[in-house]
Image (tube, rainbow, N blue to C red; front, side, top):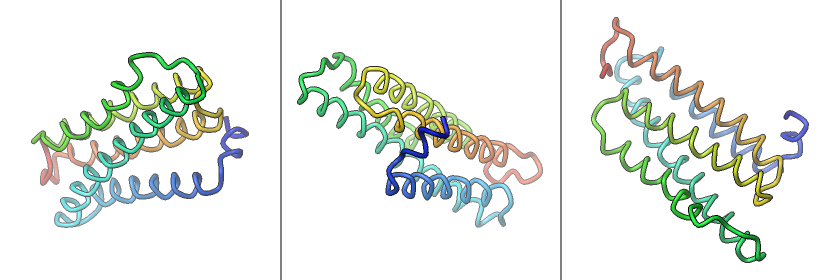
Length: 161
């Protein structure tokens, strides 16, 4: 996997790692920051997570369009599936419970990775893409687990839900 990740274009690597840094910085601010910082970091984490989730879904819409333009068969479910991350993101913003918001993001990122696997298996995305997205997805899920742990800590309680 690491060999294929090293084939990732430089700009993609920089953008992906910068996004991963943001996830971890916000999760750690929720866990260890002052109450005011924790609440602000939580709000930013949810909004940033929804933006990234929507972006990754849109990537799949583009992969489907590109495959179709090259006369490669695209399963009929792929276009609707590529919009599900955006719908899940919107639902995440509409929810009240902090715990549920983070769990929805976790489900969304795992689901979009499953789309990545399917796209790579069908030849619609390069091998480095699936492996890099695997690395990023694992990192995002770890950061979200840290945030989930932080909001569920009984001693602080400012975000519990």
